[in-house]
Amino acid sequence: KQEVTQIPAALSVPEGENLVLNCSFTDSAIYNLQWFRQDPGKGLTSLLLIQSSQREQTSGRLNASLDKSSGRSTLYIAASQPGDSATYLCAAVNTGTASKLTFGTGTRLQVTL
Amino acid sequence: GAGVSQSPRYKVAKRGQDVALRCDPISGHVSLFWYQQALGQGPEFLTYFQNEAQLDKSGLPSDRFFAERPEGSVSTLKIQRTQQEDSAVYLCASTLPRFVTGELFFGEGSRLTVL
Image (cartoon, rainbow over the protein chains, first blue to last red):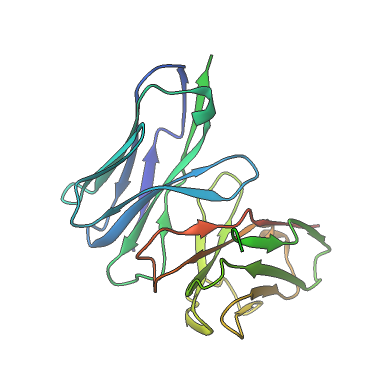
């Protein structure tokens, strides 16, 4: 059974810092890995999707990497802004069960002025 | 529609009541998913529809939970004889392709509180 872990559970950084969020998964037989953002009381917004054959994906100030062999993904946020404050969730899709995402518990990020 | 729409946004039920939660996915999206999110946790998979066919219901926690998507568009998640442990946010998501091969679009969720 796939298990996804995110460290740290919470993170507070001053505005302007670059930061890295970590995601690890136990089963490397994944179809893709996705990163989402969740604001309080809201649904999830898709940020980046990395297919199993890819190493990384970039969108603006966000860069996500994937290392299947080590069971790790990282989300890099450059030049953080207060508007980046949210909970960030990673989720894996396994090749044998491509109907479901297995989510981590998220990293709650606060960017302070 | 412009996005995934869920209703009601908030529902308070007495223990033992039946509830129905509605999801209106993005028009034309083939795949529809229901997830359950407890406070402080990541979403947990409940069930998956491809058009009107329920292809995976392995995440439904008990036979009190039932989901349908009769015409391949709107979906309803029904919980019978609600229990306190059913209190959670129920999220619906849709995507154009089959399975989770593309970007998922989530609704804002229905927050269920069982007293």
